[in-house]
Length: 167
Image 1: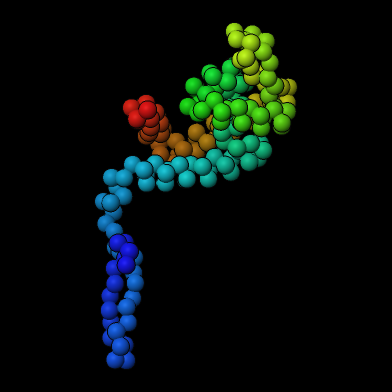
Image 2 (image 1 turned 90 degrees about the vertical axis):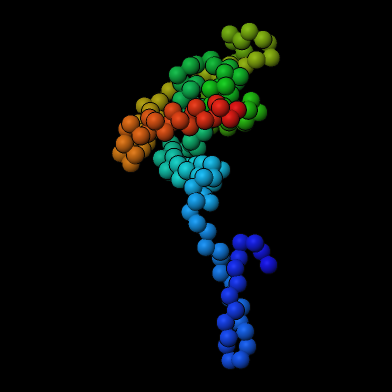
């Protein structure tokens, strides 16, 4: 017997039949659960962002890394990891993927340490910049339309603050 099930016995032709039904949870169990609600939000946002960036042949994570490289040509892996709040090993995989697509290139030019590589956008990436920015702007307008601009800004600020406090 699992703790999240409840059982109800009803007579049926002289025998007891047991019906299993999912326990009727009250919404308060989930209303106070940060884990559940953040993940539910992430799934909803991911569906929208995945669809938007599919037209550009990029995942949302790759698109935002590319935006960062376009805005800061020659940025280091360490700086990208810091800005995107991801591990350097994850950044390395993302940069590898973007390099395979011909969107970025690595160089030790301008690096303070001979082991450090800088990431630069290619001409192909530069030609995508307008479409990339338009996609991001459209997503922002869509979220402001759904939530209201003040609520959107407040939500993002609160999420960033919460992430800092939990780190």
